[in-house]
Length: 293
Ligand SMILES: [Zn+2]
Image (cartoon, rainbow, N blue to C red; front, top):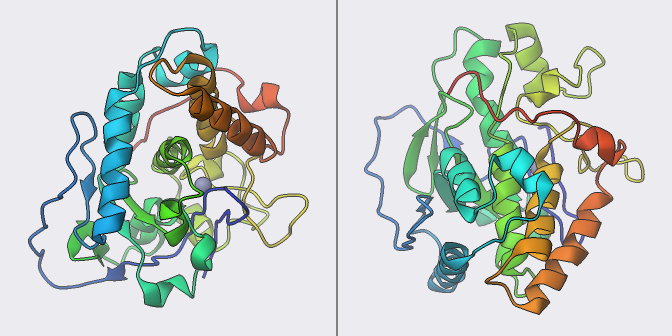
């Protein structure tokens, strides 16, 4: 089991394991309709969420639909390509298609109640056939939905309990979605040898930073050997969280002053997740492509 996570305090958790989903071999099942409607998000929200959780997601999506930005923030423009909220909508819609709850049985095996969301694992599992050509396209059953993992953009993101805690604000939840969306990018096709390492042993010395851009795999933090919860890549998932929070703090016209201050505080927390100088984190032109899209 390989783990990529951030379970500390108010941070995002991700994993390289299948978590709430299980591999299946049967035929596709009918996908249930989402009960959560949104004008701008096209994420298929699982009916397996309980009513309270659906309410949280509905409130989040409603707020996200209404969000409006002024155009002062350069980082947001550089990463997303423009100033408006529509660019963030497009970024998430392209990368997150299914939002499903984690299974209780699996929760114990992951990060417990501190888990907020899991994305990277699902973005890497599609590489199994690359790693082992005898394996067909993996399919997973996630809370009643069958999803073929035939691209890093298959778009499965799993929520953990902490996503719904009252201490987790909508500002943070939006930054979490943007963070997990970034894990769905794989700009360069890994060779089979490297694909196996990315899935099973990203700490192997043969894995370079450029290899880790497939899924934007996190690095272990300096102060905690067990947590893969920092970034040593430019324009990685924590950078995306940071950009969204800085944008909300600086440019959000529809937010309350409290929400803008929450965004500022959270951005300072994510700032601590950068293992390289911020000039390097935001260096050059970001690559938003995925070779297999
Ligand atoms: Zn992450």
